[in-house]
Length: 215
Image (cartoon, rainbow, N blue to C red):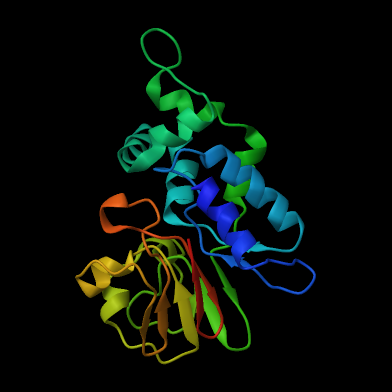
């Protein structure tokens, strides 16, 4: 969602000299401009932004080498990402399962190298959450769960630092259609469903500790 992302950066008056910006993943798929978003995030990271890996980036990285993983990625918005790179295949040209390999190598390597979590004195940042029974991502052997966990994280009790996460749209957590951050006992969910027009989804920036900006 390139347009929403750039509008939000302008709205919060992001200043690399004075602000610490942490992005929680899911930069690709479903929206129309994945390539432009990746290029922008590469520039931002070069300027000091922290960009974490989300499950959609994880799916793309795995789709490069495995047809089954490629099929899963296609089911979750991968085709929209390929269209943003003007990549097509099938019918005697590139086989569908080889299409992800045509994404520029520097983009794939960038996405592969994204960290899975980030920590400050007061907060932990992660894409999806922590598996049940864990209060810190450094103790989690299966880092994939940091990008994919859902229900067990939402119902667990966090006893560590406040965790800021995305992945699960907050209107599905609440069970009603309000696209606003979810604050609950040491957990803050800020995925407010920017790609979901049905729920009037928004893209959210949380200026810690509790100021909310949305487009």
